[in-house]
Image 1 (spheres, rainbow, N blue to C red):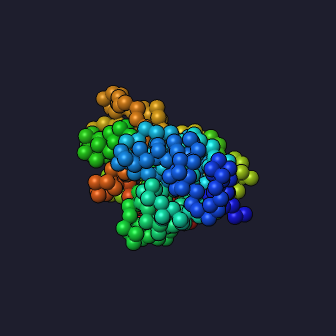
Image 2 (tube, rainbow, N blue to C red; image 1 turned 90 degrees about the vertical axis):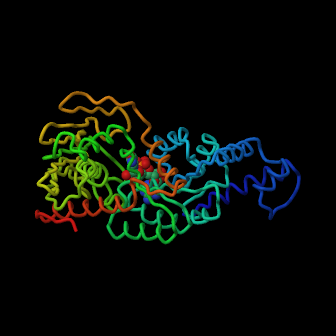
Image 3 (cartoon, rainbow, N blue to C red; image 1 turned 45 degrees about the vertical axis):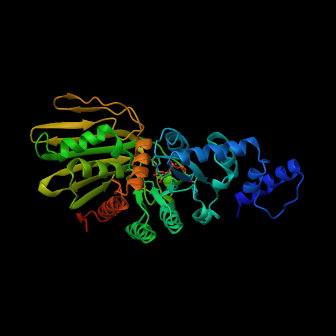
Amino acid sequence: MYTNYNFDRYTRRKFIYDFSCNVGFAALAINGLAATMGCGTNTEEKQEEKSGNQKAQNKLGIALVGLGGYSSGELAPALQETEHCYLAGIVTGTPEKAEKWQKQYDIPGKNIYNYQNFDSIKDNPDIDIVYVVLPNSMHAEYTIRAAKAAKHVICEKPMAVSVEECENMIAASREAGKMLSIGYRLHFDPYHLEMMRLGQKKVYGAIKKIKADNGMDGTSGWRLDKKLSGGGPLMDLGVYCIQGARYTTGLEPIAVTAQEGPKTDKEMFKDVEETLFWQMEFPGGIKAECMCSYSKGTNLLRAEAEKGWFELSPTYAYRGLKGKTAEGEMNFPGVNQQARQMDDFAKAIKDKRPTPVPGEMGLQDVKILTAIYKAMETGKRVEIS
Ligand code: NAD
């Protein structure tokens, strides 16, 4: 059903305004007028003032699209720590969430959108970056709409559910002259940066083998619905293993093979795989052995090289990562991965430099994900085009 949340808000705010000022300017924009005449509520004034202060500090405004677990548990809290960007707006289909977030984060009413009036975000100078945090099959639509609204975009992983969608997203951002990045937070974590350094600089000699596992025991909701997720744990968790193998070796896989694991719950996993094993061939004979699952908790990224090994476990978590090499433990400070990731994108926009995690990187991962599913279905080795 169509819910014009902003319209509802306007109506309610107009009532407050009329009541308190006893003026009947029915057709006037309540936001601006009420503020100018000093009739806005304290809360509204506070929200606008706080937002204005952030802008004055040269921070870019981010609007989160989709206020589910990741937005509420990680991104919004991280945006309280960022230096180059701030939580300026939200896009949600649930008025109760809008109200709660508005109070909790002092978001001005004019920066709150729903999925129907989202495109009018193009007229809002407070919003510089749209961050798409929706189920996977909705990433392409909202990224393209945001680009058409002349906004820079961060899109969550996996970038989309098909190669064609990824290409359209990249084209839309390019046409708009705006930047597109993927929510690959681990590129900003010191433990993963160390895996990149050790592997790409061949600190232990040439890599021979990678092992990457990512699984959790249980999932629910849209992740089990192929129309919304595009697939099972490979789309959600396996993409981290692909990323890990790519950035540890600094190379692109040439071909893949894959085998679906047994289904212990045929009803729950009627639409998507429960467990998947796959192998990636890299140039120079490097092999990556990978596994992902929605019924087994596991977390590893390990590289075996000519003169030693290095690994992370836990690997893909938000915090509490641990790393070891043949010579001993890694010891890095814990960081807020999401704050670093968003700050780096905002800084890239300000400095007019590329992001290290662009749409093209997400596209390459979706090409690999697609090849892995093809290999799983056909039982054949599939080359990555
Ligand atoms: P979630 O289920 O907690 O939230 C999804 C949000 O989308 C909800 O607010 C829901 O209301 C909204 N939504 C809008 N239309 C919907 C529809 N038709 N069906 C279902 N929900 C709909 O999911 P999440 O865990 O926040 O994941 C969102 C995205 O973020 C996914 O792409 C996921 O892969 C990604 N994610 C990334 C990380 C990371 O570490 N980078 C972590 C978690 C999730």
